[in-house]
Image (tube, rainbow, N blue to C red; front, side):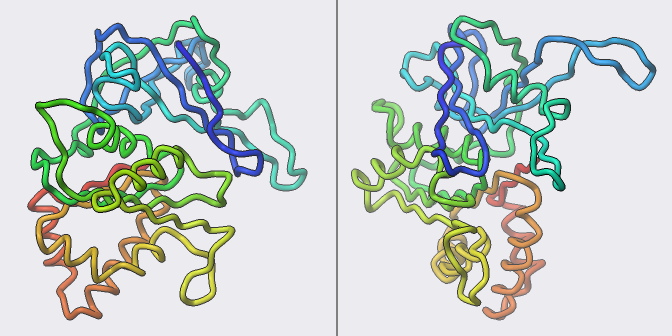
Length: 280
């Protein structure tokens, strides 16, 4: 462990941390993959036997060269899992997430047991001129940070991103934004290649006067997004699985408005491997 940094403001809806881990380049990965983390300690299984904790998967939030660009580190974006009693409003320490709390409380120099890397669903396309439409809620932004570090932060003669990167990010409020400083820097430096749109459910309202959720923000740009997808763009979704039903319903509704057969439209995207989903 090299560092653990809280990256949300005081009024955020949870405690999210940027965690940098030294790998010495021994477990190389590609952007969009995940590492498994095995927390220390033991648990009692269903048969009453004491066994080690199992593997928890976390999306990698750095490009293949790490944040220091030397290939010796990796980065995880982790939200501390806690349980709040709905009646008292008080956290129950007995029900906190084992692995997320271990990572969020880790200290520099502490050893982390990891497995992997694993995963191929969220890999970037080989075409450096592709349009990437990336949709995240909360820590689902991790693989997309890996993407944009690859696209805009690295300076390699062997890789030069020339396409469009459009980031849609859904969180509760402004204090819950993750890596906003990096995204604002990219927008200032690459305004023709990087776009950023937030859905802040507790601060913004949608066109019908309700809370602004991620599917509402995407729908505002439906014409542009469908045009990009018609011309070969890739669309990625990562975050809590609860976001997908609303997104699917919105896409189906937009298809109907455009006179498109949703099943055929969606099937074409899936068949061409341009619709990528990883939720948890």
